[in-house]
Length: 73
Image (cartoon, rainbow, N blue to C red; front, side):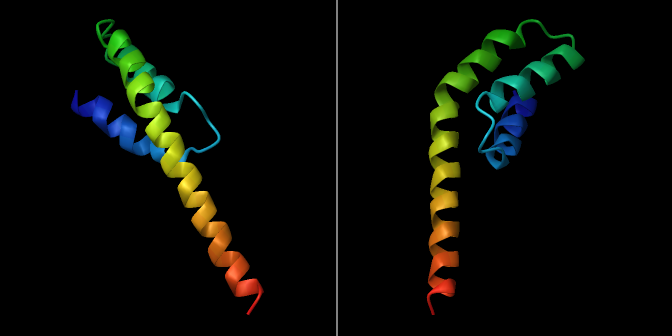
């Protein structure tokens, strides 16, 4: 479970990769030979995928707003 949480937080930097939580968790599950983690990977993507996208889009909007403000000064 700790590894799954780590994958979720590491996935926040990938805004253009939908399913990155699922992919990361599946890679860890296959490495650990833990087939029981596959449903956990799917659940994590379903529950946290939307939140991840909202956070990444918000970060992009803020970055663009800051750059536009600096350009128009």
